[in-house]
Length: 104
Image 1 (cartoon, helix red, strand yellow):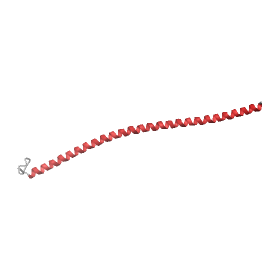
Image 2 (tube, rainbow, N blue to C red; image 1 turned 180 degrees about the vertical axis):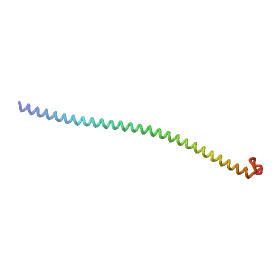
Image 3 (cartoon, helix red, strand yellow; image 1 turned 135 degrees about the vertical axis):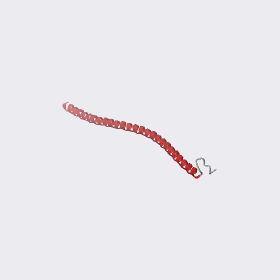
Image 4 (cartoon, one colour; image 1 turned 120 degrees about the vertical axis):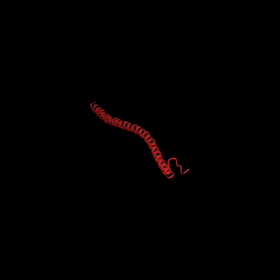
């Protein structure tokens, strides 16, 4: 009876040790999953930030492109106006005045 009882206690002790080992493995796995979940959440946050920043960059670049277009239009108009004024002055001088009486 005492041999069977000792054998039973040895088996129970062995099973208990295996359960403890399995419990430690499961705790490690859960901790690992938790850390992985935190990293995934961090990646999702970074992806959302990048999406927001890219949308903002796209809007700002469109606004800058429009501003530069109008700046160029104004510059061409000013250059054209100056060119026309120079042409008019040269024409007026060679034709006898502002009314261009000699060139008619």
